[in-house]
Length: 325
Image 1: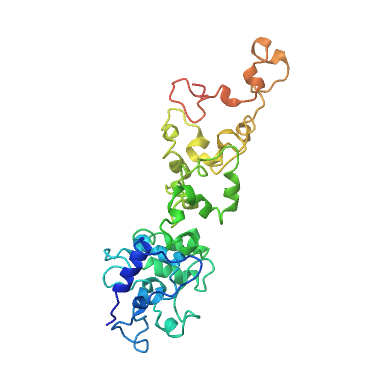
Image 2: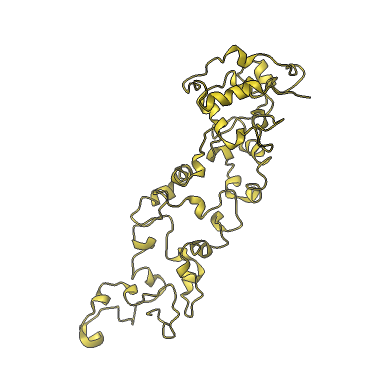
Protein backbone atom coordinates (compact mmCIF):
# COMPACT_ATOMS: atom_id res chain seq x y z
CA UNK A 1 0.00 0.00 0.00
CA UNK A 2 1.45 3.35 -1.03
CA UNK A 3 1.83 5.99 1.66
CA UNK A 4 2.11 9.68 0.80
CA UNK A 5 3.90 12.26 2.92
CA UNK A 6 1.71 15.22 3.83
CA UNK A 7 3.97 17.52 5.84
CA UNK A 8 6.01 18.76 2.90
CA UNK A 9 2.97 19.35 0.68
CA UNK A 10 1.55 21.47 3.50
CA UNK A 11 4.80 23.44 3.41
CA UNK A 12 4.30 23.96 -0.33
CA UNK A 13 0.78 25.24 0.27
CA UNK A 14 2.11 27.69 2.86
CA UNK A 15 4.80 28.93 0.52
CA UNK A 16 2.37 29.48 -2.35
CA UNK A 17 -0.16 31.24 -0.14
CA UNK A 18 2.41 33.71 1.14
CA UNK A 19 3.42 32.35 4.55
CA UNK A 20 7.02 32.12 3.29
CA UNK A 21 8.98 33.46 0.30
CA UNK A 22 7.41 32.30 -2.97
CA UNK A 23 9.25 30.04 -5.38
CA UNK A 24 11.13 31.79 -8.17
CA UNK A 25 9.54 31.67 -11.61
CA UNK A 26 12.94 31.97 -13.32
CA UNK A 27 14.54 28.65 -12.45
CA UNK A 28 14.09 25.70 -10.10
CA UNK A 29 15.67 26.06 -6.70
CA UNK A 30 16.54 23.44 -4.12
CA UNK A 31 14.04 23.20 -1.28
CA UNK A 32 15.02 23.19 2.36
CA UNK A 33 16.40 19.88 3.62
CA UNK A 34 13.27 19.33 5.71
CA UNK A 35 11.17 19.56 2.55
CA UNK A 36 12.76 16.46 1.04
CA UNK A 37 13.44 14.39 4.14
CA UNK A 38 12.70 10.74 3.38
CA UNK A 39 9.58 9.25 4.85
CA UNK A 40 8.37 5.72 5.32
CA UNK A 41 7.17 5.31 1.74
CA UNK A 42 7.90 2.36 -0.54
CA UNK A 43 11.31 2.43 -2.28
CA UNK A 44 11.48 2.98 -6.03
CA UNK A 45 12.31 -0.62 -6.67
CA UNK A 46 8.99 -1.70 -5.16
CA UNK A 47 6.64 0.94 -6.51
CA UNK A 48 6.12 2.78 -9.77
CA UNK A 49 5.11 5.86 -7.79
CA UNK A 50 7.42 8.38 -6.17
CA UNK A 51 7.89 7.78 -2.43
CA UNK A 52 6.74 11.24 -1.25
CA UNK A 53 4.00 12.17 -3.71
CA UNK A 54 4.01 15.83 -4.71
CA UNK A 55 6.92 16.60 -2.41
CA UNK A 56 9.16 14.49 -4.61
CA UNK A 57 8.02 16.46 -7.67
CA UNK A 58 8.58 19.80 -5.96
CA UNK A 59 12.17 18.84 -5.30
CA UNK A 60 12.84 19.87 -8.91
CA UNK A 61 9.63 21.46 -10.21
CA UNK A 62 9.31 24.18 -7.58
CA UNK A 63 8.74 27.21 -9.80
CA UNK A 64 5.67 29.38 -10.26
CA UNK A 65 4.50 27.79 -13.50
CA UNK A 66 3.97 24.55 -11.53
CA UNK A 67 3.18 25.67 -7.98
CA UNK A 68 0.31 27.81 -9.23
CA UNK A 69 -1.77 24.64 -9.08
CA UNK A 70 -2.00 25.08 -5.30
CA UNK A 71 -4.35 28.03 -5.95
CA UNK A 72 -6.70 25.97 -8.13
CA UNK A 73 -9.56 23.58 -7.44
CA UNK A 74 -7.38 20.62 -8.37
CA UNK A 75 -5.18 21.11 -5.29
CA UNK A 76 -7.81 21.46 -2.56
CA UNK A 77 -6.80 19.07 0.22
CA UNK A 78 -10.35 19.00 1.61
CA UNK A 79 -11.95 17.85 -1.66
CA UNK A 80 -12.08 14.05 -1.73
CA UNK A 81 -12.79 14.12 -5.48
CA UNK A 82 -9.59 16.03 -6.27
CA UNK A 83 -6.10 14.62 -6.76
CA UNK A 84 -4.86 16.38 -3.60
CA UNK A 85 -7.70 15.15 -1.43
CA UNK A 86 -7.08 12.64 1.34
CA UNK A 87 -5.39 9.58 -0.12
CA UNK A 88 -5.14 11.14 -3.58
CA UNK A 89 -2.25 10.55 -5.93
CA UNK A 90 -1.49 14.29 -6.12
CA UNK A 91 0.65 15.21 -9.17
CA UNK A 92 0.79 11.57 -10.26
CA UNK A 93 -3.00 11.40 -10.48
CA UNK A 94 -2.68 13.21 -13.82
CA UNK A 95 0.94 12.71 -14.84
CA UNK A 96 1.11 9.02 -13.98
CA UNK A 97 3.62 7.09 -11.84
CA UNK A 98 6.87 9.04 -11.50
CA UNK A 99 9.07 6.59 -9.59
CA UNK A 100 11.18 5.61 -12.59
CA UNK A 101 11.46 9.24 -13.66
CA UNK A 102 12.78 10.20 -10.21
CA UNK A 103 15.13 7.24 -10.01
CA UNK A 104 16.67 8.28 -13.33
CA UNK A 105 17.26 11.78 -11.96
CA UNK A 106 14.74 13.39 -14.27
CA UNK A 107 15.20 13.43 -18.01
CA UNK A 108 13.00 10.97 -19.95
CA UNK A 109 9.44 10.76 -18.72
CA UNK A 110 9.68 6.99 -18.34
CA UNK A 111 6.01 6.34 -19.01
CA UNK A 112 4.64 9.53 -17.45
CA UNK A 113 2.18 11.82 -19.26
CA UNK A 114 3.01 15.40 -20.16
CA UNK A 115 0.39 17.89 -21.32
CA UNK A 116 0.00 20.71 -23.80
CA UNK A 117 0.26 21.29 -27.56
CA UNK A 118 4.02 20.50 -27.52
CA UNK A 119 3.75 17.43 -25.30
CA UNK A 120 5.29 14.10 -26.23
CA UNK A 121 2.17 12.22 -25.15
CA UNK A 122 -0.44 11.97 -27.93
CA UNK A 123 -3.68 13.96 -27.43
CA UNK A 124 -5.69 10.78 -26.95
CA UNK A 125 -3.57 9.78 -23.95
CA UNK A 126 -3.64 13.28 -22.47
CA UNK A 127 -7.41 13.48 -22.81
CA UNK A 128 -7.90 10.03 -21.29
CA UNK A 129 -6.32 11.35 -18.09
CA UNK A 130 -8.67 14.35 -18.00
CA UNK A 131 -11.81 12.43 -18.92
CA UNK A 132 -11.16 9.87 -16.21
CA UNK A 133 -12.54 12.45 -13.77
CA UNK A 134 -14.46 14.88 -15.96
CA UNK A 135 -17.10 12.46 -17.18
CA UNK A 136 -20.14 14.50 -16.20
CA UNK A 137 -19.12 17.93 -17.50
CA UNK A 138 -17.06 17.16 -20.59
CA UNK A 139 -17.16 13.56 -21.78
CA UNK A 140 -20.81 13.22 -22.88
CA UNK A 141 -20.45 14.58 -26.43
CA UNK A 142 -16.66 14.74 -26.64
CA UNK A 143 -16.05 11.55 -28.71
CA UNK A 144 -18.15 12.91 -31.59
CA UNK A 145 -16.99 16.53 -31.34
CA UNK A 146 -14.99 18.39 -33.98
CA UNK A 147 -12.20 19.00 -31.48
CA UNK A 148 -11.85 15.29 -30.74
CA UNK A 149 -11.87 14.48 -34.45
CA UNK A 150 -9.03 16.97 -34.93
CA UNK A 151 -6.97 15.43 -32.10
CA UNK A 152 -7.14 18.56 -29.95
CA UNK A 153 -5.85 17.96 -26.43
CA UNK A 154 -7.67 19.38 -23.41
CA UNK A 155 -4.41 21.06 -22.38
CA UNK A 156 -4.25 22.86 -25.73
CA UNK A 157 -7.09 25.06 -24.45
CA UNK A 158 -6.98 24.67 -20.66
CA UNK A 159 -4.11 25.85 -18.45
CA UNK A 160 -4.46 23.98 -15.17
CA UNK A 161 -1.42 25.20 -13.24
CA UNK A 162 -2.58 28.83 -13.22
CA UNK A 163 -5.03 30.20 -10.62
CA UNK A 164 -7.32 31.47 -13.39
CA UNK A 165 -7.64 29.38 -16.52
CA UNK A 166 -7.81 31.93 -19.40
CA UNK A 167 -10.36 29.86 -21.31
CA UNK A 168 -12.74 30.02 -18.34
CA UNK A 169 -12.94 33.85 -18.39
CA UNK A 170 -14.92 35.72 -21.04
CA UNK A 171 -12.36 38.52 -21.35
CA UNK A 172 -9.51 36.13 -22.22
CA UNK A 173 -11.34 33.16 -23.73
CA UNK A 174 -11.53 34.69 -27.21
CA UNK A 175 -7.73 34.83 -27.46
CA UNK A 176 -7.50 31.13 -26.61
CA UNK A 177 -10.11 30.08 -29.17
CA UNK A 178 -8.87 32.33 -31.96
CA UNK A 179 -5.37 30.96 -31.53
CA UNK A 180 -6.65 28.25 -33.89
CA UNK A 181 -9.74 29.91 -35.39
CA UNK A 182 -7.88 32.67 -37.22
CA UNK A 183 -10.67 33.56 -39.68
CA UNK A 184 -13.06 34.29 -36.80
CA UNK A 185 -10.34 36.34 -35.09
CA UNK A 186 -10.18 38.58 -38.15
CA UNK A 187 -13.97 38.93 -38.27
CA UNK A 188 -14.02 40.23 -34.70
CA UNK A 189 -12.10 43.32 -35.81
CA UNK A 190 -14.68 44.31 -38.42
CA UNK A 191 -16.84 47.35 -37.74
CA UNK A 192 -19.90 45.26 -36.89
CA UNK A 193 -19.23 42.38 -34.49
CA UNK A 194 -20.52 40.70 -31.37
CA UNK A 195 -18.89 42.11 -28.19
CA UNK A 196 -16.40 39.29 -27.67
CA UNK A 197 -13.30 41.48 -27.76
CA UNK A 198 -14.98 43.72 -25.19
CA UNK A 199 -15.45 40.75 -22.84
CA UNK A 200 -19.26 41.08 -22.72
CA UNK A 201 -19.77 37.59 -24.13
CA UNK A 202 -17.62 34.56 -24.85
CA UNK A 203 -17.29 31.98 -27.61
CA UNK A 204 -19.02 29.52 -25.29
CA UNK A 205 -22.09 31.79 -25.25
CA UNK A 206 -22.92 30.21 -28.61
CA UNK A 207 -20.64 27.18 -28.98
CA UNK A 208 -20.07 24.08 -26.85
CA UNK A 209 -16.37 23.24 -27.24
CA UNK A 210 -16.71 19.80 -25.65
CA UNK A 211 -19.19 18.69 -28.30
CA UNK A 212 -22.79 19.10 -29.33
CA UNK A 213 -25.35 17.39 -31.54
CA UNK A 214 -26.06 20.72 -33.25
CA UNK A 215 -24.17 22.10 -36.27
CA UNK A 216 -20.94 24.01 -35.51
CA UNK A 217 -21.12 22.67 -31.93
CA UNK A 218 -23.81 25.21 -31.04
CA UNK A 219 -25.30 25.28 -27.56
CA UNK A 220 -28.82 24.98 -29.02
CA UNK A 221 -30.22 22.68 -31.68
CA UNK A 222 -30.21 25.25 -34.50
CA UNK A 223 -28.64 28.58 -35.40
CA UNK A 224 -31.96 30.38 -34.94
CA UNK A 225 -32.55 28.86 -31.49
CA UNK A 226 -29.06 29.92 -30.45
CA UNK A 227 -29.48 33.50 -31.71
CA UNK A 228 -32.93 34.03 -30.22
CA UNK A 229 -31.65 33.00 -26.80
CA UNK A 230 -30.47 36.62 -26.60
CA UNK A 231 -32.46 38.20 -29.45
CA UNK A 232 -35.83 37.10 -28.10
CA UNK A 233 -37.73 39.84 -29.94
CA UNK A 234 -37.11 37.96 -33.21
CA UNK A 235 -38.12 34.54 -31.90
CA UNK A 236 -41.75 34.61 -32.99
CA UNK A 237 -44.04 32.97 -33.84
CA UNK A 238 -45.37 35.74 -36.08
CA UNK A 239 -48.60 36.02 -37.99
CA UNK A 240 -46.53 36.79 -41.08
CA UNK A 241 -43.18 35.01 -41.03
CA UNK A 242 -40.20 35.79 -43.23
CA UNK A 243 -39.06 32.35 -44.38
CA UNK A 244 -35.26 32.90 -44.39
CA UNK A 245 -35.50 34.36 -40.87
CA UNK A 246 -37.36 31.35 -39.51
CA UNK A 247 -35.00 28.98 -41.31
CA UNK A 248 -31.57 30.33 -40.33
CA UNK A 249 -30.38 33.73 -39.10
CA UNK A 250 -27.09 33.09 -40.92
CA UNK A 251 -28.91 33.40 -44.25
CA UNK A 252 -28.59 37.16 -43.84
CA UNK A 253 -26.17 37.71 -40.95
CA UNK A 254 -22.53 36.79 -40.40
CA UNK A 255 -22.39 36.23 -36.63
CA UNK A 256 -18.62 36.60 -36.18
CA UNK A 257 -18.36 40.01 -37.80
CA UNK A 258 -19.15 41.99 -40.92
CA UNK A 259 -18.16 45.17 -42.72
CA UNK A 260 -21.89 45.93 -43.09
CA UNK A 261 -24.26 47.26 -40.40
CA UNK A 262 -26.11 44.79 -38.17
CA UNK A 263 -23.75 41.94 -39.11
CA UNK A 264 -25.38 41.74 -42.56
CA UNK A 265 -23.59 39.80 -45.29
CA UNK A 266 -24.38 42.51 -47.85
CA UNK A 267 -26.07 45.87 -47.82
CA UNK A 268 -29.65 46.27 -48.93
CA UNK A 269 -31.03 46.10 -51.56
CA UNK A 270 -28.35 43.64 -52.73
CA UNK A 271 -28.94 41.26 -49.83
CA UNK A 272 -32.69 41.28 -50.38
CA UNK A 273 -32.29 40.79 -54.12
CA UNK A 274 -30.40 37.55 -53.62
CA UNK A 275 -33.92 36.13 -53.11
CA UNK A 276 -36.29 38.83 -54.40
CA UNK A 277 -36.23 39.84 -58.06
CA UNK A 278 -36.12 43.61 -58.41
CA UNK A 279 -37.87 43.87 -61.80
CA UNK A 280 -41.33 45.43 -61.58
CA UNK A 281 -40.80 46.76 -58.07
CA UNK A 282 -41.04 50.52 -57.55
CA UNK A 283 -37.53 50.51 -56.09
CA UNK A 284 -36.27 50.23 -59.69
CA UNK A 285 -36.02 53.85 -60.86
CA UNK A 286 -36.46 54.06 -64.62
CA UNK A 287 -38.14 57.41 -65.27
CA UNK A 288 -40.03 59.84 -63.01
CA UNK A 289 -43.21 58.89 -64.88
CA UNK A 290 -42.81 55.30 -63.75
CA UNK A 291 -42.95 56.23 -60.07
CA UNK A 292 -46.04 56.95 -57.95
CA UNK A 293 -46.83 60.67 -58.16
CA UNK A 294 -44.09 61.21 -60.70
CA UNK A 295 -41.54 62.19 -58.03
CA UNK A 296 -38.74 59.84 -56.99
CA UNK A 297 -38.94 59.07 -53.30
CA UNK A 298 -35.83 59.54 -51.20
CA UNK A 299 -36.60 56.19 -49.54
CA UNK A 300 -36.51 54.47 -52.93
CA UNK A 301 -33.44 56.27 -54.17
CA UNK A 302 -31.54 55.27 -51.03
CA UNK A 303 -32.04 51.64 -52.03
CA UNK A 304 -32.79 50.47 -48.49
CA UNK A 305 -35.60 47.91 -48.56
CA UNK A 306 -36.05 48.15 -44.79
CA UNK A 307 -36.93 51.83 -45.10
CA UNK A 308 -40.40 50.53 -45.98
CA UNK A 309 -40.27 46.85 -44.99
CA UNK A 310 -39.21 47.64 -41.44
CA UNK A 311 -40.62 44.44 -39.88
CA UNK A 312 -38.40 42.20 -41.97
CA UNK A 313 -38.04 39.63 -39.16
CA UNK A 314 -41.82 39.09 -39.04
CA UNK A 315 -45.06 40.95 -38.45
CA UNK A 316 -48.13 40.38 -36.30
CA UNK A 317 -50.20 43.08 -38.00
CA UNK A 318 -53.23 41.79 -39.96
CA UNK A 319 -52.06 43.94 -42.88
CA UNK A 320 -48.37 43.09 -42.42
CA UNK A 321 -48.08 40.66 -45.28
CA UNK A 322 -45.34 42.76 -46.86
CA UNK A 323 -43.62 43.31 -43.47
CA UNK A 324 -44.31 47.04 -43.66
CA UNK A 325 -45.98 47.18 -40.22
